Length: 317
Image 1 (cartoon, helix red, strand yellow):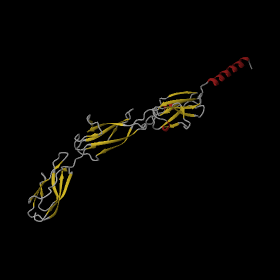
Image 2: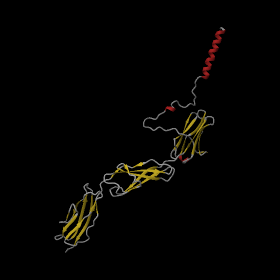
Image 3: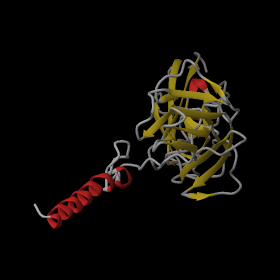
Image 4: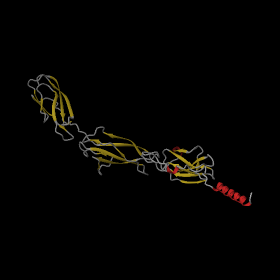
């Protein structure tokens, strides 16, 4: 073999060896190639990456989710890369938690304002991250109102119930809406009588506050004020003073509707004026004994009020 051919083969071998040593190689600890391009499917909320204080080495990183943790729920450590060991250590305010194992730490281990740190792997191939536990917002979980039926002329009271995972005292602010419009004068738990009329739509908005933050606003369902029934306000005479018995029935209607009067049960000969409510009865030929009188007062919408009493006629009266 010639000297020229030997030199060429040696040079070619050196080139191939250099490519094998310095060519691109994919590290086994590199994060998945699709890690930065993952997107949630439509309709799902995308979970944010925690804005934590973190550090790492050897191609390893760790983050703590959720992004803004509170004393409700659990923290999760998300590890990227391959740590130097499987060791996961949680600590709160610098003190390691011996009982905490794995990549999850739940709220029985920390409270508001605590600093929670997770450390994974080794000092050479590992990482750590720290988050601060924030305030847990108060939330309204129930609301009751009284009375059960709302009519013109009554006051309405609402009583909210809230939960706060930090155990804070919760105060409330109120805003009543009449026909969808907020009234700046109606900002108490009680909606005064006379502030709404028949057919109005009533709602209340309630905001809980734990001194630190406002919680989400609760908006009640709309309630339409129905027709109010009339009310009989008079009492029948206690005795009989003449042979011409009279009783002027009096009634009121919260909606100021016109009223109609009728006798549902009465002795023969007794009448009532359907417009004025005046009852008359000529006792000349009346039969002695107990007589039941039942009066019905109704408004144009069909709501009714009733009054019933017994009138006793003694022989000779």
